[in-house]
Image (cartoon, rainbow over all chains, first blue to last red):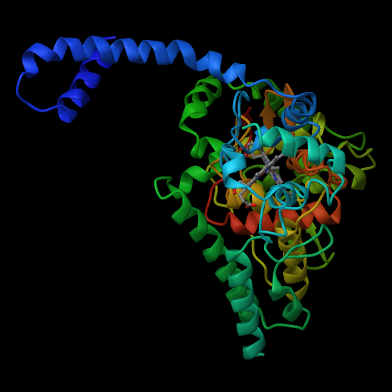
Length: 143
Length: 302
């Protein structure tokens, strides 16, 4: 608590004009702490609130399951536990892969974009079916 | 001759740099260098090629993990992973393989039905010789690993061979390794035939295989030190020095070839038989790459 307080105090000092600092400080501190507390309490709720459609849910399961996509072996993904760090974290997929076909191809056969990739060619090697890849793409777009 | 060697050297440099890049499928191999290795080469040329491979291979790790001391690579993943190293050091204080080593010693000293013992089959009575394995037997024209030599010793004395993955053979191998701790690995590649076996092992190491399409080099070089799920990937350098190992997951000792089979299965590839030519050549290649490291088997692993 003390730690949060002092560091947010420092950052507010930096952004506000220097004059009546002493009087304003506690106020800012209280404000900052409240803000942080609100954020902390809201965050998990927000993450869970993203309602997944049925197909997205299926995609999530496929992505997490060790005998299927096992994407977590290499990628951090939202609430996936014990993720590896061989590949980049998968987030903001829609913004970063506006073209659905490009994202799909990365999963179906990552060697097309990067012949030297270490990511398994999921559809090309029959690890996942076409429908399963589609479901995972749907899930990724929810990230 | 000279040009061939240079083509071969440059090729293997490129291959080593792009681990697995050329390898598209399980059947395909990485190093372009292979093509030029068919022809007979003079011993100095073989020596030069192998030395260069070792230099590139060890150089890769020196650069990737600049804080890790060379000698520490014999400790596998614990050379890289601080978090599990502490735990491992504690385990090594009361080694879980101790009973197996004792068993191995008893087995080693128990005479066969004909009155002879293992000691009669090996140099120096089998003591302090683990570091001489594997080697390429120029007469037989094949790689001889310690476990293979143990079984051939049995067979030449009229005994049944032992299973190669665990049990008695692992205990005997563990005992023999324990008498050789800190001895230098120094496998030689001194003939065309040896070079061919070495290159087979090298090809195996860099080839993508299995439904998941991984090469050994993918996991144990390219992304070594990173995590697959919660598991840190250990370095390929030193992989042959610490075996057999007691794995907590196995709750017993296992041989190097048992581990090879495990890693093959993990990528959904068909494993080869323990002590198959494929795995022996792979062990040979891996041991040459680990030149300069010392024996520290048996060891404990997760």
